[in-house]
Image 1 (tube, rainbow, N blue to C red):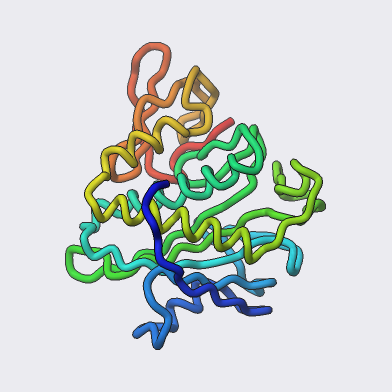
Image 2: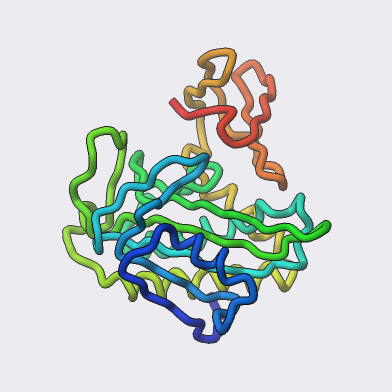
Length: 248
């Protein structure tokens, strides 16, 4: 983290349907430039991947979106945005506690519990990415969750102390922009290697399930387009896009 990153805006709103929607409506940015963050105390329509609902008690967690304009990336390279955001958040959390990993493709786990979810919506123009709207839900100060959520955890549950939400947003913003700067300098392979090295359950064999049933495999690779490559003990390779396979 040697690069010096300029200060970018951090916008606070009390309530909004979705922080991602905020940037979708800022078609010409109207004074809100690349690298800006908007965070909310509460989202009335907060969501995660594939339409999942993201639960958050009002004012307790960090619910934010950031906008980037990665014109240098082609459509088939968009997974690198997911990688830099995941790494940035994982690194921040590891300054507060250990044992934080990235669960493919971009959930953040503390041990076997989910602490953060990421939703990235890319707006494409011809063959490149015009804009990336990065939505993040990070459990910070909430300590009680609905029973239907299987494995939540927050920083307060881990460390027993309250965090200033804006301060957390600032630190994560800086780390994302540092990685983004590295991406624009062309250090993409270094980022990809680091992502793979910090994957949840990156070593050893574990149980997975796909449309055909349950099987045991290890993570062999994650391809540049985000496809995960699993290898069974019989050395059979299985490749999946997101939601085609799940951890057991």
